[in-house]
Amino acid sequence: MKNLLLVLSFFCFHFVHAQSITARVIDGLNNKPLGYAIVLYNHQQKVIYTDINGYFSLQTDSLMSNDSVAVAFLGFIKFVIAAKDFKDGMVIKMVPDMQNLQPVVVTSCRKTETYTLNKKTGRIKQYIGPGPETRLIIMSRYDNISGIHGYLTKLSILIDEKSPNMQVPVRLRWYEWNVDAHAPGKELTDTSILVYPYRQGWNDFDLPAKTIACPKDWLVFGLEFIYTPEYKNQFDLLKANAEKVKWLSDMQNRWSLSMQYVTDEDDCGFYIVNNGDITRYEKKYDRYFIRPALKFTVEVCVE
Image (tube, rainbow, N blue to C red; front, side, top):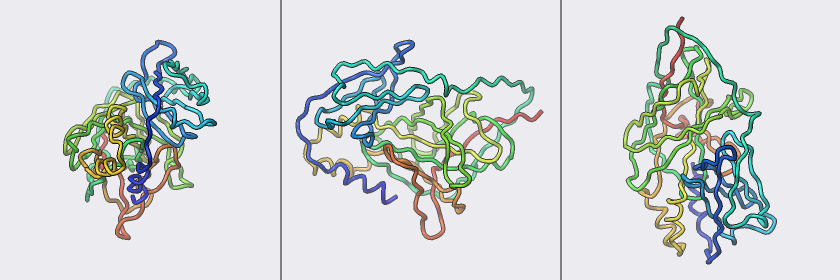
């Protein structure tokens, strides 16, 4: 957690006037905009997102001469262009990644039942997320005590204290579990699903049928919190470092999430900051680990 809080110091640097380069990201097949695509620069260590219409802007002085700009979106081949070739008004047409498309599984089941995974969330603590220019994915493992393979039909996200100034889209991600590393492994996400937590307490979201599988042993699930370009622009309007630090210190300008206490180390929460590695949350009070307070409704076939 301390590592994430240090993000505040990341924003304290000198800003100068610079020319802005604006580009747009679209689906190369149907020309539809790809909203909230990931844009990486500064040797893929800094991250921003496109807006809902696929547009994004970068300052020329934020691009080094030997740098590149990369664009990533689920289901598409990653696009990379040298910084010197990145021009204002560019339209980036993303190519679908046919090799990574999941096969369509058609099943028939005359009788199904649903149950709640992680129904008892137990003790809860509040977590305050970092500010703009920070891509954050928080993930954890949730044991499937039923021992039956199924599909998620609903996700519930607990928020103790909703920040009134924030409306942060959250992209859902899911993974395999790496038994040897005791950590999330290969990412299985093949569909861009966005949800918008909007109120204090439990936020419930229906999920597309038979899209997110719940294995019979455990579910490894992640939340990617997206700072929209519109929100980041509010931060960029503050020119003085002191103003930026004050703005970041106001918790109403940052999203929050309820974190659940657990005792099993394998159920601990993990996180990714920007384009970094998966990192485990530190142990709390020599006894507890923390992870996102989530509940899942799972549908199983009982024939």
